[in-house]
Image (cartoon, rainbow, N blue to C red; front, top):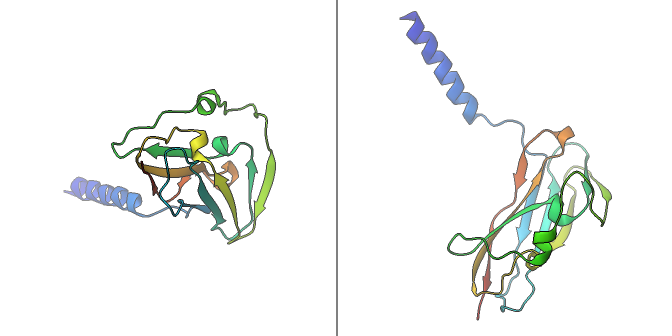
Length: 158
């Protein structure tokens, strides 16, 4: 009987551990979609806002926005749209690619914005609804994991 009680305690503790959240994410990501419906030939851009939600200064090293952020785009059928040549040739990894290399320090509650021309990566010329979400890894010195943005829908009409 004691064994069953002990196992029950371990099971309950394990379940509760999964429901108690760890430290909150040190930053948030918010994306805004274009306010108008887009034509098939229109460039598709979203505005990204990264906000320091921690109680201390945080630092990011920005290189190429498409390497700094992961972007997920799906059409109304859940399929990935076709990649552009730029996306297929994009090299992200240990070696820093040509482009910017900025150190960005944000104080608590401070934000910065970036325009993200998503049509640079994906062919969004087919009329449809496209669902977009952006993510960024948490810098190692701040913990681990990934912060995801809200998801938005962009409509391309004929």
